Image 1: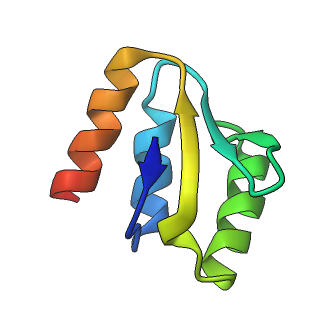
Image 2: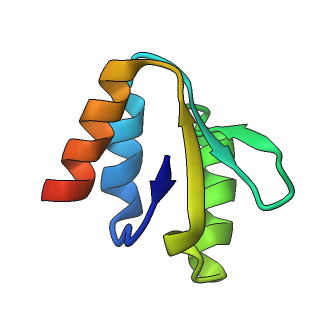
Amino acid sequence: MKIKNITDAGKFLEVVCHCKGDVELVTTQGDRLNLKSKLCACISLADYFTEARMDDINIILHEPEDFEMLTEFLVRG
């Protein structure tokens, strides 16, 4: 799932924390970082915000209902 235009990282991570399965951020090098891990989330999102690449992130969801929850957040904020 490609994600674009995240302006509130805190709210995004709050939604990620409520996901049932793992939510992995795929780096440009192909590494997968589990965003449900507070340390991985802080490091990876801080990097993406400082590089202004939040319109270029790809995440992998492991549960279908998590896709619905994240889509709802992206549409409604």
